[in-house]
Image 1 (tube, one colour):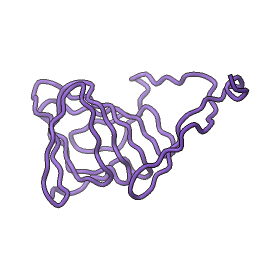
Image 2 (cartoon, rainbow, N blue to C red; image 1 turned 45 degrees about the vertical axis):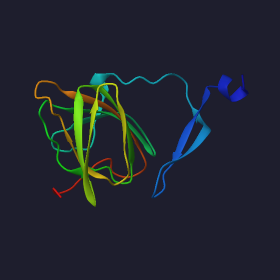
Image 3 (cartoon, one colour; image 1 turned 135 degrees about the horizontal axis):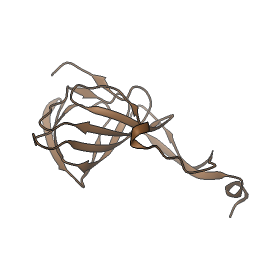
Amino acid sequence: MEEEEREGWAAGPRLRASRSRAKYEPWVQTPMAEIEVVHTSEMKKSDFTSGIIRDKAFETPGLLFARSRIKGGNISGWHHHGKRETFAFVLHGQLHFEWVDGEKGSADVKAGDFFRIPIGLIHRDVNPNPNEEAVIINLFLGEGPTTVNVPPP
């Protein structure tokens, strides 16, 4: 074991954001004395989009780890995630995404699926099941606001 690890330092990834895509610098030393736990009751509210409840667990420069909840039958407002790239996992339920990037597009995801939303893509989240909340675990990479609400295209 290296001396830094014995002294409470753990190797961890570091993120550097660019205009086109997040870049990673793995194995930068970060101080860590213990495992940090955030219980559901301790999560903080994150940026608002109509129809989506976002709670953040961890936020560091260039990274936000959060949970999104979309009630059954809800359609979110149109938005994008600024200069942040979004990686996500569907923990519960299902979603239908609609987006506009010159042309319209759509995709469906369900529990167990992973998805990625590129930087600046204008989209909305639709929960097609009126009886079931969708729960998404998000990792936002990059700098700036997490959510930028926009008028319908």
